[in-house]
Length: 334
Image 1 (cartoon, rainbow, N blue to C red):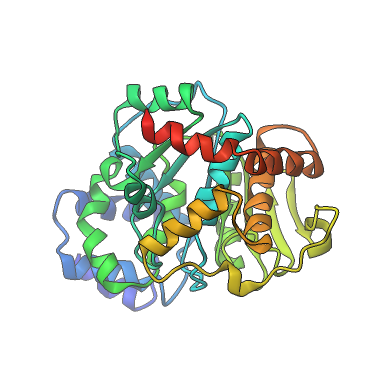
Image 2 (tube, rainbow, N blue to C red; image 1 turned 90 degrees about the horizontal axis):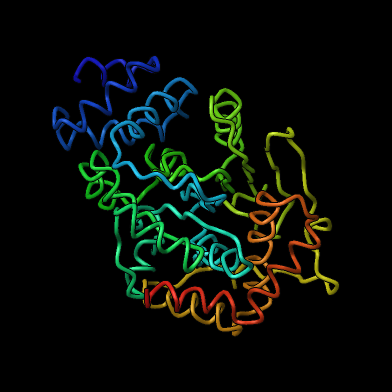
C-alpha cells in the first residue's frame, strides 16, 4: 500500500485491476485508516481515470450484499454531492414524487459526508428502518412503489472509511463511486454530477458497460449536481449529449424565476426534515416545488416514452394531490 500511495502522489494512475485490488484489500482490513484517508483525498487533487473508476466499481459491486430487484422497471435518482451548494434533499423528494406518479423507485444513499443531511439521515429521522432483506425490499416496491437501500448495510467495505469521510467533511472518491454501486441495479438512473469532467467520465463508463441501462447524467452549468433551473443543463444519455436551456426546462405555463436562496438546506437534519415535509405537504415555495418537479420529470421520462411536458404534468399531479406524501406515509407504516 505504501508503494501504491507513493505512485499516486507522484501523479501515476492505477490500472483497472490495481484499483479493484485496492478495494479488496480495504475490505480485508489490509489498509489502515490513515492510508484510507490518503487514498480517498488523492482524487481531490486530480480526477480519477476511467480505468480507476471501473476497477473501484467492479470491486464494490462484487463485495456488496446481493439483492435481486431486477423484476421491477425502476429508477434511482441520485447526485454525487460535493457541489458545496448545501441544497435541501431535492433528489429524495423527487423519488417520492415519481413513486406518487405510479412508478417504481429503488433509491440508494447514505449518511452525509460532505453535506448537512444525506438521504439516510433524512429517512432515519423520519422513522424509516433500513433493511438489506430482499423480501422486505420487494414488499416495499410492490405495496408502496419505493424502497431505500442504505449503502453501509450493503457495502461493508465502505464502513471502514465512513467515519473518516465524515470527519473530513469534504467530497472524496467515494462520492464519485456512490451513485454507481446501487445493489438493486435499477434499470434506469437519473444521475446528477457536480462537474462536467466527471460527467464525461461517467458517460464513457456507461457507454462501455455490458448491461446497457437507461440513464441521464445531468449537470447544471452553474455547478449544481442536479437540475436546479438556475442555469442551462448539460445532459448525457444513450442518445448522446445535449444542452437544455432554462427556457426549455421552464415547462410550467407560468415561468418561475428560481430563487437560489430557497434551494438551500437547513443547518441540521431536523431543519431539512421540516423542509422535506413542507414540500410534500404542498407548503414548499415555488422555487422548491419547481426544482423537485423538474428532477422528477426527467426521471419519469427515463421510465416512459412520454414528453417532458406530459411527465411534468404527471409529477405536478403527484405532488399537488398529496399522492407523493401518501407514499411516504405508507412506506413508514409498512
